[in-house]
Amino acid sequence: MDEIKILDIPITNINKLELLKGIDEHFQSPEGNLFFVTANPEIIMLTKSSTSYKEVIKSADYVLADGIGVLIASKILGVPLREKLPGYELMHDFLAYANWHGKTVYFFGAKPGVAEQAAKNAKAEYRGLKVAGFMDGYTNKGPLVANEIAETKPDFVFVAMGAPLQERWIAKYKDLFPTSVLVGVGGSFDVLSGNVKRAPKFWTSNNLEWLYRLVTQPTRAKRMMQIPLFLVNVVRERFSK
Ligand code: UDP
Image (cartoon, rainbow, N blue to C red; front, side):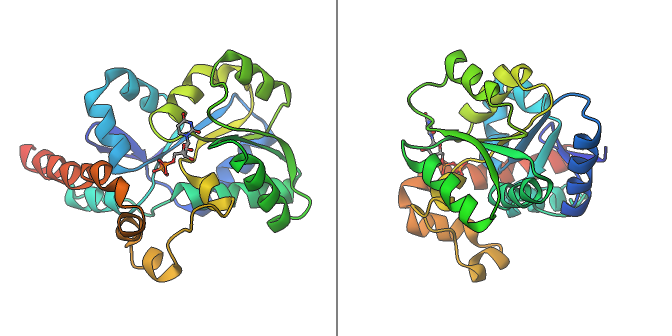
């Protein structure tokens, strides 16, 4: 698979169409499970301060560029990625795929009640969607809940606990899901459930989603400082070559 290294993290250089084709091939003859990471600058910066988290991210089958920050980094490095694939949109693409192909989906993560509401809204949007189950991301995050989720034999598992928790959880328990597609989707259930508003189209289509989030959720400011730091590191890498 075509990959582009950004700060030593191999990002899968793929577009949405190819990705969905890959999912289709996977379900026709599964050779194991598939672990998806939607990488943003924050995730990539976290891998710099934790070798164990870096191993987790490197063990994923697909590490996708979640947003414009990673795309800009690829341009700075002179190896431009073809497309950004934000976690929220990926989740919708997988929901549409699951609905069309009769695959089941499990919603794991977010505050109590949120995953359930997200599942309800998904069913309303994708009529006929088969929901394997839902579970909040606070009550239990250990083997008990992992086994309970695995028993429902979900085709897709959306894990919405934020980074690094969600990727660590998937890496730890993915063997319980022999043919599933497991995806870390961050705060996506908060949006799907209607608790948090996603940036309106103007902001997303102008690559300003990060600014919208900063303005509407100023508590994220500290975390978002990772974005300029990330770009500084990328520029440094560019000129160290
Ligand atoms: N969360 C969780 N369990 C935890 C900590 C967080 O389920 O122990 C959830 C939290 O409720 C939120 C999501 O993880 O729904 C993280 O959202 P955030 O917006 O921080 O993620 P991002 O989209 O930025 O990756």
